[in-house]
Figure 1: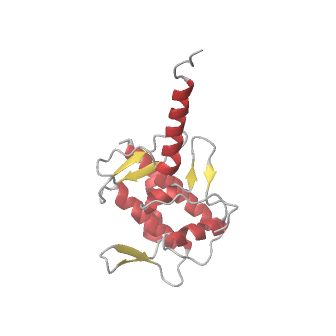
Figure 2: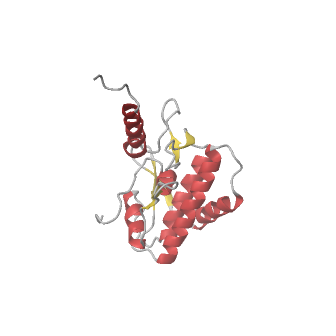
Figure 3: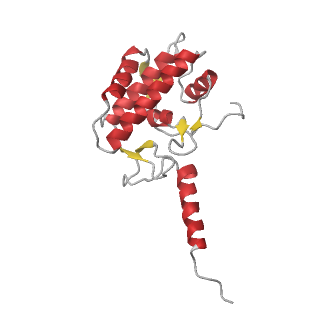
Amino acid sequence: MRADFPDFRLGSVLATSFTGTLSERHGDAVERIPVPHRLVDWLAVYGLAVDSCTTAQLDLARELRESIHAVATAAALQDALPAAAVRVINDRSTQGRAAAVLTPDGKRHWRLGPASRVEDALGVIAADAISVVSGERDGRLALCASPTCRAAFFDTSRSRTRRWCDMNTCGNRQKKARFNAGRRTGPEPAE
């Protein structure tokens, strides 16, 4: 992967990790898939290798990403799911061609065929979003407590009380800000 692009923020849940390819949505947004070949790179990291990506396919991916973000945010807030976003997720899910296979350690893995296209990989991501939002997986959707981020993430912690989408970025940034604010408002130095 090329160093002139922002690093990917990788997580264990495919759908919410995909929404993380646009971070700091309420601050200085960081686009992690600004060009088609970066989407190819991201998909490969998640075992969804495709040979190429066009600008039109990148647009489809971004539409799916934003639809998943909208639905996951609504679900986390226990609001009604936006119909247009649900339609995009369902369309991508039904249009993709991938097979679920069982690994030797008993886990599900998605396999794309040798002639797979970006749309097939997007189908896998959409299917993952459906399983997360519908409650088929053990965990809960939550929103990052960082006021500049507010990313939807899937909390699988034991207590289901995780506050940050990523402790190494948002969590540390917020803890550092609280620490620095406490130092500024601390006791006056003795003279």
